[in-house]
Amino acid sequence: MVLFCILVWGLSYPVTRPAVQEIPPLSLAFARLFLAACLVWPLTRKFPKRIDRQDRLPVCSLGIAGVTLYFGFENFGLKHTTTSHAALIIATIPLFTEMVVAIRSRRRPAPRVLLGTFVALGGSPTSA
Image 1: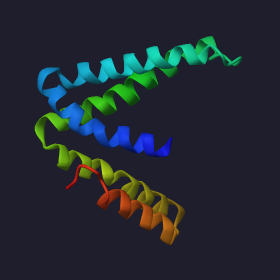
Image 2: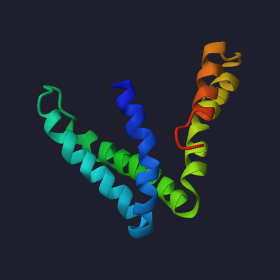
Image 3: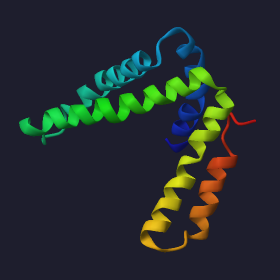
């Protein structure tokens, strides 16, 4: 499953790049969220715990703001840069996340964490 996720994630940039040339970035991001919601919604019917009524609007708002806006900005970036540059920028997220954690917790990152973040940075499948 991990390899499948890596493959799908790595292929999303070369697939999204031509799509944003034809579809506006925010429209594509919203369509992506809508499709994901349609695919995941039937799976949620199997879980006995439901989202409380008062939490539904905040959860939907977070989905729209967090997911749609994130992918909207990513799509906007892909429209204006190359796939390789976008993949390289996205690959820096683990590095910057670990830097923030290290600064906030006042500790040095473990060597394996540093190795993982640099592998993510240098091992992006589309950065070649």
